[in-house]
Length: 264
Ligand code: MF3
Ligand code: CO
Ligand code: CO
Image (cartoon, rainbow, N blue to C red; front, side, top):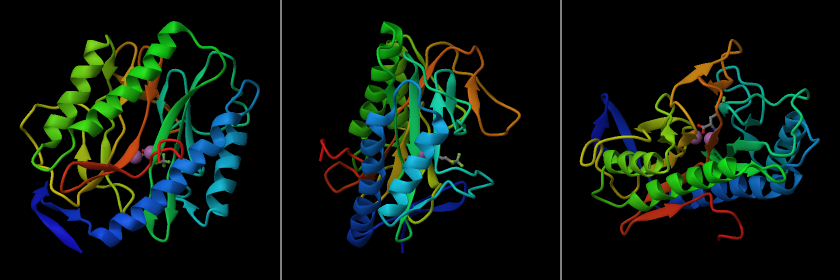
């Protein structure tokens, strides 16, 4: 295992080699395939528990283990966050999707010891014009961050690009949760904030692998964690959307491990 000469709060930052990239391509493919598989099932009338069970079955059939199960006491194969739920929504048979909802599904299959982490926000039937703009802005915010990744850029550049884009849309960027190093560890160094100052923070080097997963709110960026210790909602109960890719810094720029089959 190689590490960067840079550290974060004294902790090393892994640099992965071509074998690691190959393993991440495989794990990322399972993660993206899981979302491709579940997409047509995200419809009015289905419960989030049913969607979770289907994701679990798909991940296991692909030879992977849902890494969220028993992760710090979490019990489910996915997080499913509807409307004003920002992140870590707990699948429930009481939560039935309705026309007009927006639904983030976040999965992290562990394949041969490697973690692929991705999420998308789906629209249930026809959603409001504002909700549609929120969802597309969250996707573009993520991709704006991804496009900033190249050797020599900093994590501050990535965060600043994301936050500037989100603010220009009239929305806010959640600060209490961030992207993270990933590879053979689920949540590793470095922290990838979705805000920042250009030219500050870790300098990106080929071989670094991390997620970019901005949460975009219609109203305040502030969030509240519910008494279940997981479900995170917007403080003002306005809606929130999120997308997540697992990416690597390459010699020439960036590689996305969690592209959908159509994008591959
Ligand atoms: N997949 C989430 C992330 O993007 C983490 C979920 S941890 C859980 O980092 F325990 F809430 F499932
Ligand atoms: Co993540
Ligand atoms: Co995730």
